[in-house]
Image 1 (cartoon, rainbow, N blue to C red):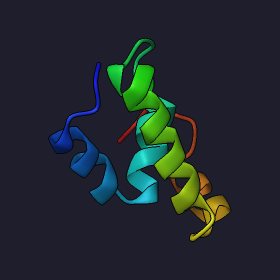
Image 2 (image 1 turned 180 degrees about the vertical axis):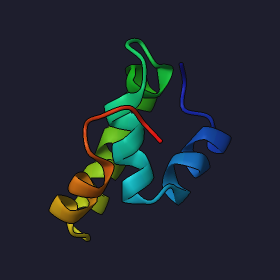
Image 3 (image 1 turned 45 degrees about the vertical axis):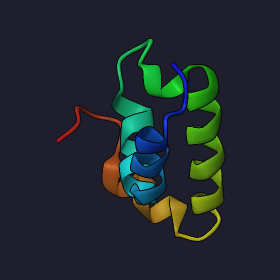
Image 4 (image 1 turned 60 degrees about the horizontal axis):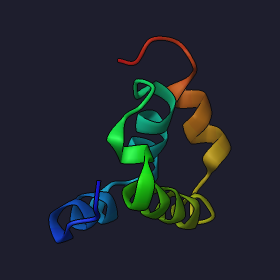
Length: 67
């Protein structure tokens, strides 16, 4: 999947918690994590990670079934 301006904007406005939740609970093969889109998603997520309390967010999300 190519990185359209609309998809880039969608990724840009996501907060870190939403990104981490998507990363943890997305089904295998989710297009958000493949190709150019996946590269961009993970780069933006890593940039946002350093600006927040990752541990607290991770604990809040957990590893169980998504809410």
